[in-house]
Amino acid sequence: ELIALQWEDLNFETGVLTVNKQAYTVNGELQIIPPKTKASVRKLVLPPAVLAVLREYRKKVDSRWMFPSPVKADRPITPGVARRRLQTILERADCKRVRFHDLRHTFATLALENGMDVKTLSAMLGHVSAATTLDIYTHITDDMQCAVASIDRGNRQGRTAGRSGAGAERHRGLPALCGEEKETRHRMRQRTQ
Image (tube, rainbow, N blue to C red; front, side, top):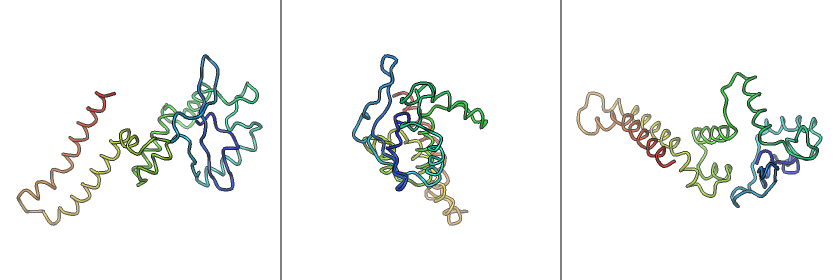
């Protein structure tokens, strides 16, 4: 999707980026085709800081493609060149090597951890349903539930300190249960992949 973006897909006034195509390599040739699903066609509102960077970048690009090929006129950059550029940027920034898809995963993880609702995130990622997003990012929502549980446990510790009984035990054991449950779910997900 990134490779297939054209400048006409971005409205600088509203900040809306329309994702309506993707690039695929077929028999060594780059093809621009519609996305796999209707949900993959979407509009994203870009933050002002991203728009500012793209405005400056646009001044240097003489192509209809946002990320044009350095060697083929009127063609987008190829996936291989895009991957190499990403790795060069990461090396210069002294960051570890990651794939483009890892950047998408990082965005989704941070969005959930910072309170974005799953339905909104699902639409931004172009998933068919929020259930797809939950299936992929269940470990994040598990971590969030455990964090809430430990906050709740911390609030109750003052009231349960010095007490005995099932209520106090339940609150003291919650983080451990979350850890065990999280590990079990992680192992089960690995088996099904």
